[in-house]
Amino acid sequence: MDLFGRDEPADGIALFVDGPNMLRDEFDVDLDDIREATAAKDRLATARLYVDEHATPGLIQAAEARGFEVVVTSGDVDVKLSVDATRFATEGRAETLAIASRDTDFKPVLEVANSYGLSTLAIAPASHGRSDALRNAATESLTLSDDNETPTD
Image 1 (cartoon, rainbow, N blue to C red):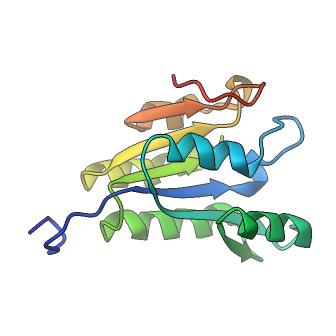
Image 2: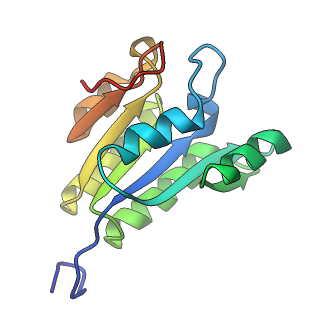
């Protein structure tokens, strides 16, 4: 029995993507890049894209077609993603928690996941869009390169 009372330990990666911070024209990152880079590390337990109410129907449809659960919020994307990711971590629903963002606001989420014994992964869109605070809080980090390859730090 594991820490969470389950006979079988959780496995896989729970991927939480901060859409407004990752899917900017300046980074030229698409959802396939993020998903493939994460899936190369382990199987995906869940893949969620968080967007605000201004997200286009085309983006939502494309994300769903790529296997993402799309969470649209009329409030702050950061708050909804943080609450959901922290809940996922505290419930032990995956072995690894991955946050794709360049926003330092997610550092406490990674710290909570670490304190619950999960591995954590910080995914940045590019070296010029990387948060050192996220990278340093995570047990592993990944920077999507400007030419859409996926080197690790």
